[in-house]
Length: 265
Image 1 (cartoon, rainbow, N blue to C red):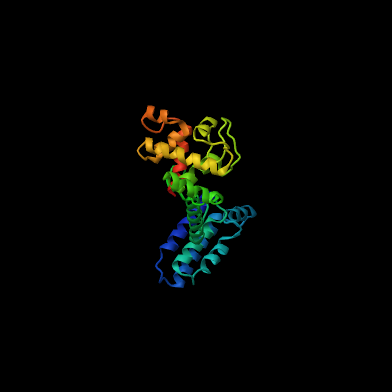
Image 2: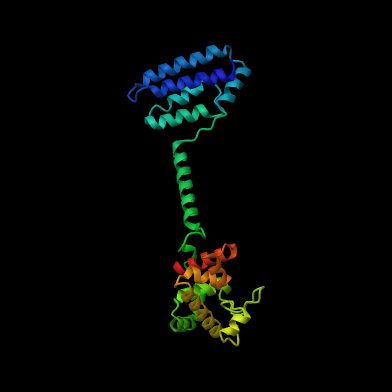
């Protein structure tokens, strides 16, 4: 007989066995197994080496029908669910199909859920205002806390907004210079710094005081809207007026989004 026919016969026996009630007697199961064993032997004909090799290959190491039946019979004392898993495991052994016990499936499912949850908890999009990704991002402002407090009180600008701008502009590096020539913590352009009375843009106090003053001017110009004030800080007040809102520049839009995330977290 061919391998596929034998596999089909095994599947039929498994279904018959699994369909039996939980209260079936062990004698009935034994009689059924014995009958099935005889059918296997009859279909195989004589016990040639070739037939035994085919059977062994199909069953993944079980060398005869009687050996398989002995394994089936040994499962008799198990609960119905345990028997079902065991029968399936025997039938799938050595086949091209993949049998995964329910316990393994549950473990895999739990692992996948845990991994997904971890990824979701750790992933934060820049598009989310107040994201936890920004929770500790303003820690660098602590070294300039007294200056920020003074600037906030002098120009009525929220301390956190000042800190958020510094974070985005220089990441709290007082000596940084941009490719465009902006200087210091709040990245003041030389002409703007001069207009605001700054003599040394790399001095943290002068830089922060001037930057806070400029933010105040932008807030006054755009009805205390921090979004528009930030857009003006980055792109210029004239462009905000021209476009009636945040200009359609990717750099400015990203700037406003990030500073607002720092500010609102």
